[in-house]
Amino acid sequence: MGEFDLIARYFSNIGVKRTDVSIGVGDDGAVLQVRDGYDIVVTTDTMVAGTHFFPDVDPRALGHKLVAVNVSDLAAMGAEPTWLSLAMTLPSADESWLAQFAAGLHETAEYYNCQLIGGDTTRGPLSFSMMAKGQVPRGKAITRAGAKVGDYIYVTGTLGDAALGLKWVQGQCEISKKHQGHVLQRFHYPSPRVALGQALRNTASSAMDISDGLAGDLPHILRRSGVGAYVDIQRLPMSQALKDSCTAEEAMHLALSGGEDYELLFTVPENRRGSLDVLLSPYGVPITCIGRITGAVGKLELKTGEQPYAYQHQGFQHFL
Ligand code: ADP
Ligand code: MG
Image (cartoon, rainbow, N blue to C red; front, side, top):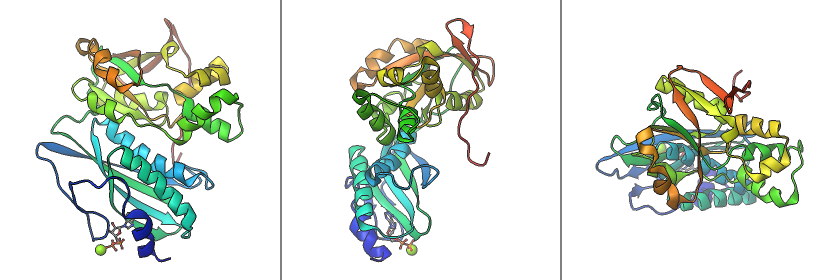
């Protein structure tokens, strides 16, 4: 099967058919209708075999994750996801693999109301690069730069579950039968907080999604906003699965430094804090206040109650 048959068969009908796509897959470029009074938000994520996923990963899960991690960046900006494009490099055209991969892309693109509008296909070492585009009312994108001294810091959901899943898949820990499903789901099928991100547009002063672990990601907000923060680690939200599967210290480490949770991290000014519970209750995703923004520029203080907590973040960085 040649490149064009492959695109036509597997990649020409991914996601929903959006009415704002005048031309999708098949021409030299896609033609998209932009809503008046909206800004476009654009993000890209690449996944390379051996670096971001195991070469023998379930292709359906891979398809899901590729869409999910991109859509999560849009969620963090308060944007509504709309269009996806996909540059892929394949060593060969394995049809059953591609069919599963495309099914994973499709399910998740459809769930988030996105359409795949184009891409590029080449032969080479297995890797995928997706670009996602979303829309947000003009000027309403939530950035990393808006946190102010005194703002409260929140996270959605629970932290550390995806990292626990990775450890388990690598045979580095044991997980009891009753928690295995939850942990695998969190690792392979992350749920970007798309509706919640949009709900925060007029309430959060800053936001980002947690892809590299809280202790690695929160400093990005601190740098961009020119502020500091303290976080009470006793308040970090952890699933029962995480608490039951590790020592307290290991659970804390995974919650602080474990990547790939794709939860939202956001700050809220004191005077908007009271409306949060009511605002977010329709979304069924718990939020937890974990600390506050301070004036100690660039400094992240971890505390347990009132005591300082000594902790060395070990995040993953390419090229180090
Ligand atoms: P060109 O050579 O003009 O760049 P291509 O031959 O690369 O065009 O692609 C043909 C059409 O197929 C284009 O509309 C392109 O967007 C689309 N396409 C290529 N690869 C993919 C892919 N992996 N997923 C979705 N669409 C793709
Ligand atoms: Mg062309």
